[in-house]
Image (cartoon, rainbow, N blue to C red):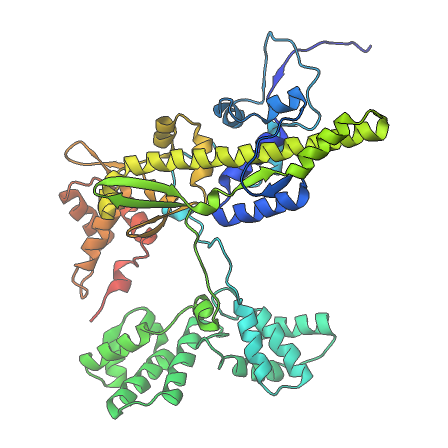
Length: 514
């Protein structure tokens, strides 16, 4: 037997305008420029230029939806609260069908904010640049391939090999797999010998060491190239030959730092071994990462903020690209007036008026959203600069104070999710360099004085201890833990290991030098 039940519930909805504002908030300066150009291309009512004020009728309900002067936290709280709550309020049957529920939006948004994250760590940082290089690594190699006098078959092999390189410039795939790819994509049968022959030619390309199959081969290619292309004295030739023998015949001992064995096998002195190691450590272990400079391409970071020190007073500015001049098209606004004055209000005219109003409202909303973005960014950066005032004065990372997202959210009166979106992918230009905003967030560690030190301060101290250690007998993590406790920083050995790895410092055994 079927029954009809009436259930009251309160659902939180995010309008398309709110969703777009959130996305505008978290994009970078470079991405904002592209987003503005996209909006101008799609909306004829929006154009670049000094803003003008127009009086035109708009749908009151849409204006209320588009107003960003309302409490900003109403948007962000939608991300933090439950989707459905039982309530005594009446249900709203006039909900806009275009609105998304919280669950629907979170399913669509791949980069949604995780509410349990109240802090950033260096491990979580994604090292990426806002703008790509003008000439890609693969394009640079293919250009060099075109200089060789190769047959059509060899050209196909060469392009397949270049396309199989990873970001570090290594060929990690097996030759047999390359042969299979060529057969599948080009219907050509090639032998291992033919692929090896083309690979040897590519390994002579710039940057040196490219297309190596492992680190040993990468270093060996660079050393042999030095021997052929550079002029050396007799003493330099001996050191270079020894370096080749170390990598070619004693690579396992080299990686394990068994230097005494290498000295005995090559019959060289300790000073000669030092010169060999110095030569090897100057080689590039990741030739793919140097391709942009070699190829003439360029990479740029566009800072979102600029902070300057004016006699102890911090002056904070938004990058000018964050404040574009946008306005509603005068001709489009006049068009609406003309249509409204038209005495013949048939169906087509009414539809045209509705369309023009929608475009005008969308343009007005977009201009308001850009202004709101500017205010939110600047307000958040001012709070960060105030909290980390001493760092922005001196640039000393030991002056960084413990700071988490919640600290800034409380200062600016915003939700944590808003601060998260502002911080994400944003950078600030200071007198000491360009820093990602995530750099200024770190956890606190208790000291003997009962105060809190930032994890960056502890890392700086850890790096100082490692830099000043006896390289013949490097400090173990246990010894580093004890020395840090003597300095007043109480952290566990596993935390020492974690910070050491984040700083890119190898274990004690691999730091050993002669």
